[in-house]
Length: 467
Picture 1 (spheres, rainbow, N blue to C red):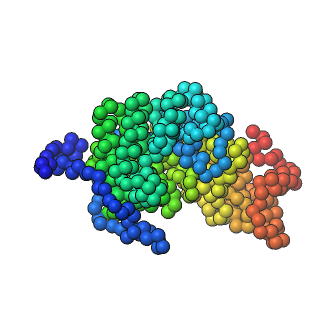
Picture 2 (cartoon, rainbow, N blue to C red):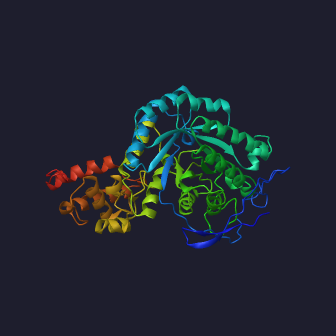
Picture 3 (cartoon, helix red, strand yellow):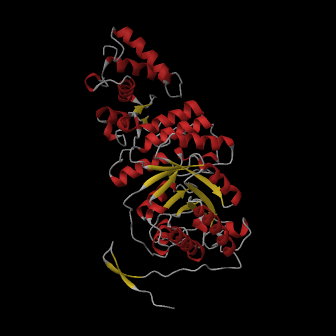
């Protein structure tokens, strides 16, 4: 075996030893990692304290799977709804196209019509891409529509290769490479979805497969992309955790040992263990260019990484939104609730009805003095949703004052204090309600009626009416 060469890495300015080239390891029995995944017990997170360096790419971006994985767990969208949501995604991504692509099913006429209509919009971003199984029949759909890029399902764990496909590793690799070559023959960029990678033999199958993909890329002079799919949500972000559960280790392996540039690597997470968001951000930190998401996290089982979450993750790690229009997130939430009929859980961050609503009187008092005390950021500016207070028996006079000020959009000079006679009068009514046995939160309609009556009794205008 020839010796590996020593070379100067231009990024770190350190001498490095050339990486080992990994060959596929054929096995007779599937490697299912029973030491980590004992099916009759809770999965185990093991550590070997091997850590890899951060490698944040120059360009990071978001891709969308709302119309693909997001449609696998809910009633299908209509063509009109798909096109409308696609328009929203275009606006949300901003002029720099930080929402880079959106992928679509191609199997029904409705989906194909939506693809055509979205492509006719002429937007550069999000680019419309497809998704197919690794079959020639599916590939014909991509050819007929004339898509520039398509995802290809390439299951990579032995759970899938042996138990679902009933193949050996060498057979699966040959099959996958055949479809990838067909894409390249027709000038279509293939994006290989490495399904179930967090239960795969990373160095016995995935890295050797990725090395073959890089050879095809070099042969055709075209990109061949990969999507790292944490299909079951087993991935972890902890430094020193072992592969295949280590997200840093997986991204490092594909980037360094297989030589993929960051812009060709995406991460697709699931939320089975509540780690979709943190694993996605971790993938960015360790070298993945793209994070694949769906709106509101809608997806298979517990769902995908929520797209709106990664918009704010992007801003936090980059220090800028780079032109993304976050107010569109609120418009999307309203569209889903009112037009599609999808109920967003009320405590969902950024989009739930109660995400910035407080019920505690002590919190309301803090909001009245300075909303920064109990609001995560200027939600009025970024989401068109100023902080609110739900009025109940625990709200106190401060909570009622905050509710009135925010509901009637009173300017700073006109805001009511907690000792204002109107606030006191409403508080007396609220106390009486709960003294008489009420257990539910006061509704907006009830408060408006009480405020109107109190204003008449006090001989004053409704708040804001004099503006």
